[in-house]
Image: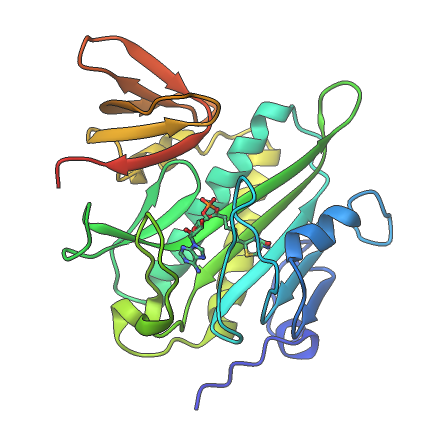
Length: 274
Ligand code: BT5
């Protein structure tokens, strides 16, 4: 039996961060950790770095009002509240930093090949999956801006499928997986969480210090150089082309068959030709 307790006492005893997860709050069950911290974004009782983790979410969210589903006690479901004082475009850097931290935390725990998928997914290689990759983690950024257009607060939500049994994985367009499903054995969540929070803090510090994570993030993107189909937010038709790169702000650059380069700020991408 794995010691899998994620409550305040158990996590505080192991956490080596300076500011992230200080304080750290645990809930057995909650609606959505992002919604809860968003509601507290202006409350000084919840300082920069506050982390809220739940063992179950009854209304877990993805982007665009989609749902995030995970059976109780199987995942890492948490959000971090930051008051970063950055220009709004650098919100994308925070998501990139989070993706890199998740990828590294998984790689330290397990001998797996971890990739990133534009715009906000962490994926694991699976030769049997359409496209060759499955989604193990999704990230969600909620921001509020001050009158000057700077980030007043940023809530970064992370949903990482750790011990979801294969038969309980939710059906999804980007096929889902878990560390258990790929590695074949349950993974202790507490050391994974501690390692992840420590990496997140280092990567957020780098972003706050002005360092762009975009080159490292791009290097891990499984979509680059591949034929893709992109459904951009707000566009009536999807776009087919080759994902050539990203720009500094994480927008995807797609070259269509006529040679035109399109810049896609937000949307979903599927790999074609597999
Ligand atoms: C995301 O959205 O991937 C962001 C997910 C963020 C979840 C965390 S959990 C803690 C925090 N609190 C919250 O309420 N949310 C954050 P998106 O790219 O829109 O993907 C959502 C889609 O992924 C859904 O429409 C499903 O198809 C699929 N999906 C749902 N649950 C999944 C899971 N456990 N694993 C993989 N895919 C899933």
